[in-house]
Image (tube, rainbow over all chains, first blue to last red; front, side, top):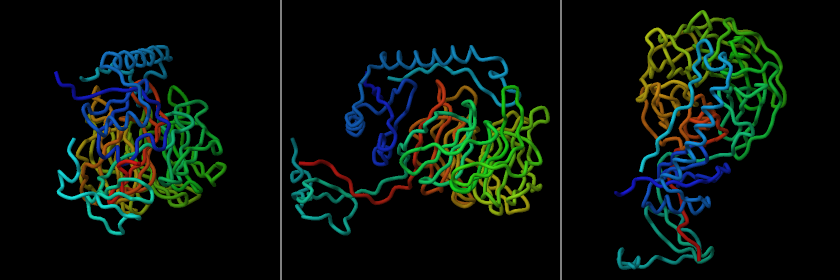
Length: 102
Length: 329
């Protein structure tokens, strides 16, 4: 099956990590664990991964990293006092699971 | 491998300096810098800026893309202030009253912080503080303590709109600040909290949010003339917990969430005084973020991502003509 996305791990160092030209050419999705989703089979996506020295991950590897981050966030949320979990009006929902796409 | 000449029918021109008025799609080799360049018209897009020193959400906001102010938020002691210079954030003076879900307006050197809540269990804040570029001092209190409210205007002509009052429900009222005290303003047509404000005290804009009476996320936009609110064009993507910036006739709305259980949106829309149009998306979807700046030069920072808070900052620009480098010898 032809994949739509590819994944890499790269730390967002701030200014210049994604520049205007890159952002206007491809769609980035920032995910927990410094995982980034970019289009597969895409020259601009490949160039960006090279620029940021991204560590390319398979779908399963990326999913594992994201799951670990989400699980930790869910555990941290579960440990909150009730008042922090449900302020009177403003919601503070438990972090939801994320399923990555091929 | 196909050569440029084989595709285009001619070679890439070699020049010693970039052409003064290239056309879109023009390619050339600059022999001085030893680079192949081309000229393109880029669409509007977000690029990354410097990360906040303290990742957090539910912060207050003020200023411009290259001179912004971030204060308060969910991280104890909820007093931290940071200043952005277009590249990086540096620490500023702490708020006197730590709080989150507050709002703000003004500039980096003359900012205003108001509302919010102070502690778990919802201790509401009516506190107003004025920033002078290095420290905060107390101003006149809001008439109605509230949080998740919207803000607009300047330190001496501020506007607070909407918000939530624990136990007393959502608030549709607005208040105007004159540098000393708040007085009542017009009532918004759509009752809401988690509203985003933009513009000035006499040409304000309120958009997005959540209306508990109908249990609905709203895309309603309202325009303020210093006296009353009138309806403007609705957002294409109704949402809450979004960020925004700009003026009444040139605003941006970005991020947030459209409905519970849906992904945090990256959708960005621009307002022209009558309707919203989709434009370049954020790179990091998030909620409870803040905005600063203008429509052509906006700034998004902080917020909540799926697994915690983020210090990510993004800069919006409209794009336009640009000379890009393809490669270097």
